[in-house]
Image (cartoon, rainbow, N blue to C red):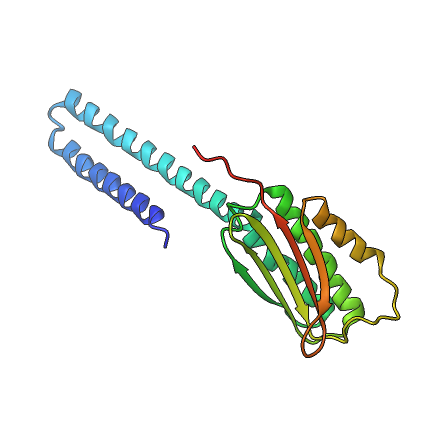
Length: 201
C-alpha cells in the first residue's frame, strides 16, 4: 500500500485551508492596508507553494510508474504478452524474489533475451498449448524456468544454434543452461546465473 501520495494530499489540503482562512482575514483588515497587503502576499505565496507541491507529486508519481515499467517485474509480463500473439495463448508467469532490486540491469537484460528466444522456439517448434514461465531470485542467483507441454525434443533434429546462444548467455555470466523433457510431455528450459555480491555498508 502506498501511503505517501495520501500524506502529500493531506498536506496540500492543510495549505489550501490555511490560505482560505488568511484570505478571509484580508477583508476584515481592509482598514489597515499595510497589514492586509502583507497577509495577501502570504496567501499568494501559499498558492504558489501548493502549485509547486502538486507539480512535484505529479512528477514523482510519473517517475514511479515509469520505474515500475522499466523494472524486471514490469518487463517480464510485457515479454509474455508479446509472445502470446505468436503462441496463440498467454503463458503463465510466476515471479519470486526482489527481481527489481537484487538483479543488476545487465543480468535482467540477459534473462529477458533468453525468455524471448525460448518462447520464440516454443512457438516455432513445440506445438504447445500451455507454457509456464518462472523467474525468481534469492539474492544470490537468478533463475528462469520455461516449461511447455508440446511435442518435446526430437533426437533426430540436430542441436540448433539458438540453444548454443542461450547456453552462452548463461556461461558468460558464470551460470548454467539445461534442456530436459517435461512430464508428461514437452520441454523444460532452465537458465541459472549467479548474482554479484552486494556491497553492504
